Amino acid sequence: MRELGEEDSLPAVFIIDRAGVVRFARVGNNIVDRVSVRELLSELAKLSPAP
Picture 1 (cartoon, rainbow, N blue to C red):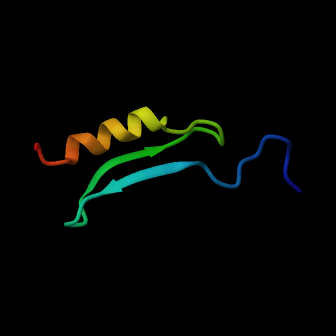
Picture 2 (picture 1 turned 180 degrees about the vertical axis):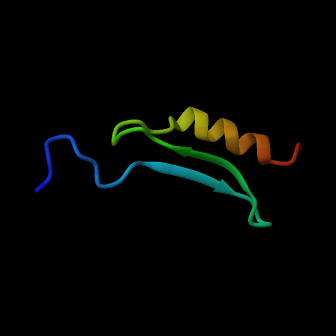
Picture 3 (picture 1 turned 60 degrees about the vertical axis):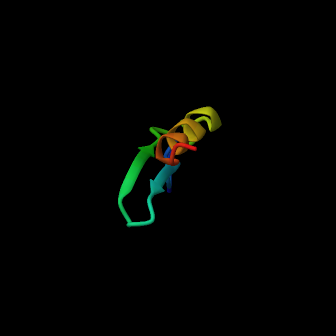
């Protein structure tokens, strides 16, 4: 039986480029510890070629 507050899984985000290289990885400490949309878009922008 699980105790209150035990986690089964944690939120995670990975950005992987076309070559299969992990360019960004973040695993949260708990279920509500997630990457913000702003941070995720910022990381994706770093990988986009300049216009």
